[in-house]
Image (cartoon, rainbow, N blue to C red; front, side):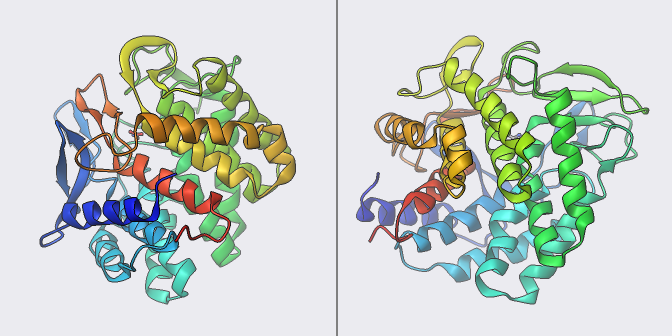
Length: 371
Ligand code: GLY
């Protein structure tokens, strides 16, 4: 667990990373330096390459809010400024990443302030995500606009952690449609993306009738392998679905994918980049995501027991603290990888590794302040 002055030191790193006119935010890091992407960079196709755009800016707002809860000085104005810039993309019809962008930013700001400004941005983004629902197959389309044949029918394991945006909108509006879409997508993921042994595909495609037409990976080592961060998104996503809906079947899937995760590496060390391939790289961000999911599960004693959370949390936290904390000149949790096949952000920190680690610390801290 970092000391309070270490977190304050990290907050200074965040402020340094966000210096300037705030038209871009760091997306990943390489060779000890952040690589920035414009906040308003939409995802989309450039010839045959699908560019994910800036899907990470919201984590920077979220980090500032989490740091405040952990006892660092409030930087609420900066979190709000990032979210206002990001609001231009609340209606983005080309990506499933809306939950990553807006749940830690606009929705968190609404939860803290009750302001309609943040409620409206959060609900616009939830509506745009819900619009990606494909009734044939019962899943949310991951990439691209709904009418683009190049990415029509795509679904990824990552989408599980975009569902919290829909669950938030359900709670805020009382509109059960948001819940029903999240439940349908989670059921489709459990059926089509989680393999019988509890490992996961990263990316699948569907035909127009909703049947799975291909299953493999985009960021993992191989189509038949198990990309560790994808597994982590599944673990956290099913934990959140179990907690928010009370459905036991989601707790059972969470236990199954977590069981695979802990059985395929030594959890007292940093997780490998891929659970089924020896790439020589670790991905600490996956550990931070799992830590956040297990910390969240503590809210439900039965779920925490099913996941053996009390035993696993200290092991995973120690591995992160000893192996990745402040491992780079920038960021908080180093030794992560954005995408090995694309040779992007290899062996550096990632905004979401840092965000989910801070979120876990806040959930695990008895007074939500370590000061
Ligand atoms: N595409 C989401 C991730 O890199 O985890």
